[in-house]
Length: 374
Ligand code: NAD
Image (cartoon, rainbow, N blue to C red; front, side, top):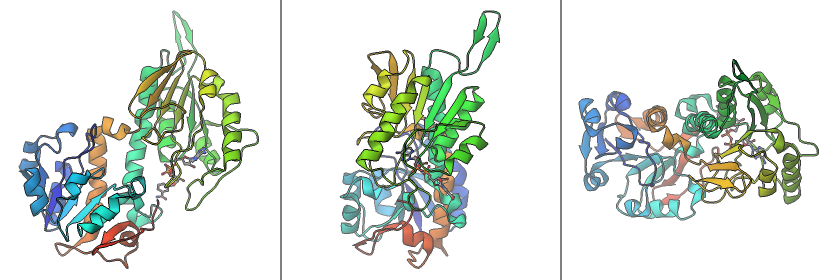
C-alpha cells in the first residue's frame, strides 16, 4: 500500500498532513510513503526532510496515480478530485457539510472517503485521532497571542517606576476546546479573563482555569446533543446579543470561538455592541469564515478597524499560522487513524467498526451520512 501526502490546495493553507517524524510509523504499517513535491514547504519541511526518512517526493500526477491512500488536511479542490481513481481512499478534514457537492463528487469517482471531522470524540480509543481537538487547541492559543499582539497595552498588571499598568480584561465567548485554550493562554500572559458559553457545564470549567464566568441576564441555557451546543431560536439569539451588548464595554479584548456543529457560526457580537467598546479594544473572531463568524462584519483572514477605534480580526485559520506545530499534531492524529484503517498492510473499510461507521462518507460508489461529531 502506498500512502500519498497531498500538497494542500486551499490558498493560504500552510499545514501538511504528514510530517517526517511519523513516516517511520507509517512504514511499520507496511506502507510506502509518497509526498507531493513541496507539500511540507509551508511548514518549513523541505522535500529532503522526507527523503531522509525514506519517503519519496513525487509530482502531482504520479501521486494521484500511485497512491492507494491519499491524506490531506483540508479538502482537495474539485480539479484534483476529478483526477482521483476508483478504490482510492482519501482521509482528511473533509467537512462534508460545508459543501453539499463535495461528497457526491468523491462518490462519482469511486473514492472511499474518511472524514476526520466526524470522529466520535467521546470514544476514548478515538482520542489520539481527534484532529478537531488538536487544531482547535492551537487556534485558541494563537488567538490569545494575536489579540495580545494587536492590543496596544499590557495584558498583565505591571508595577514599574513609570507607574502601574492595569491588567487587560479579556472575554472569551464560547468555551469549547479552543475557548479553554484561549483562556489558559490569556491567563498565562497575565490578563484578567472571563469566559462565557451557553452550555451550563462550562461554568465549572471556566472557574477551574481561574477565570470568571460571565452571567448574562435572561439568556437561555442551550445544551445540545453529544456535549455540543444547539442552535438558538431567533428570539433567544436576539436576547443573547442584547445582553452581551450591555456587558461588552467592560472588556478590552474579546476572543470569540462559538460554533454549532453543521450550522453557520452564531452571531454573538453585533456592530452596535462593537461601538460600545473603548477605542483601542481588540476583537479576534476565530469562527470567521466565508459564511460569517461570531462578530458582525468580520471577514476571514482580514483585520478591519471599526470607526471608533476597535480592531476586529477575522482569524478563521489560525492553525495554518502555526503550520509546523499544527502539522505535527495533525500528523499524529492521522497516523493513529491510518494505523486503525490499515490492517496487514491493506486499508480495510469495516463499517461495523464504530470509528469508521462514523467517519466514512463515501464507500463503494455510495455516499454515506457518517454519524460522529458533525
Ligand atoms: P465547538 O467548536 O463546536 O463549539 C465551541 C463552543 O461554542 C462550544 O463550547 C459551544 O457550546 C459554544 N457555543 C455555541 N453556540 C454558542 C452561543 N450561541 N453562545 C455561546 N457559546 C456558544 O465545540 P468543541 O470545542 O469542538 O467541543 C465542544 C464539546 O465537546 C466540549 O464539551 C468538549 O469538551 C467536548 N469534547 C469532548 C472530547 C472528548 O470527550 N474526548 C473531545 C473534544 C471535545
